Amino acid sequence: MSRQLRFGLCLALAAIVAGTAIGADRQEEHRGEAQPAEHRGEPHPGPSGYQRPVEPHGWNARPGTFDRGAYQHNFQAARTYRIGPYHRPPHWVAHHWVFGQILPRAYWSAEYILADYWLFGLEIPPAGYEWVRDGADALLISTQNGEILQVEYGAFS
Image 1: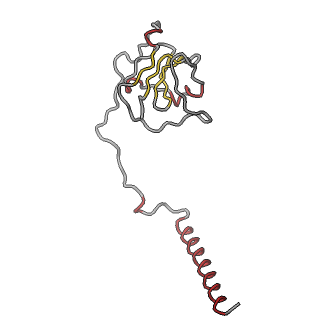
Image 2: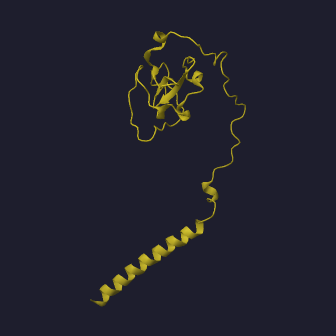
Image 3: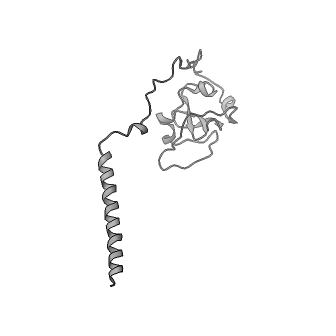
């Protein structure tokens, strides 16, 4: 091997070792430390003068008896609300639900129930029913067996 080739290889190897050592030193500098000041946000006290919307009068006066036929509809929502990301239950895929179908139990656990349904223009659910979210849709379901009584498509974005 020529001297020039050996010298070039030695220089390349030295550059690689030095680069790795510098990277390791930089990682050690920040390990266990808080983020540098320029990367931390400034303190924010939160909104002032904000009042949580109060429940409308009679929001939980759920009818004990009701006409199922009056509820059994698949509506397109009159308005779309943005309430944050939706995470489908693990191992489930998107589905287009309609009234009369049975929603699997994984979809009506506490994290999917819309307890503040009035904030989204949804009707007062009858006793034994709750509104739940599935993706962009709101579903009125029986809490006994998961039967879908009504669907509001596109209620959320």
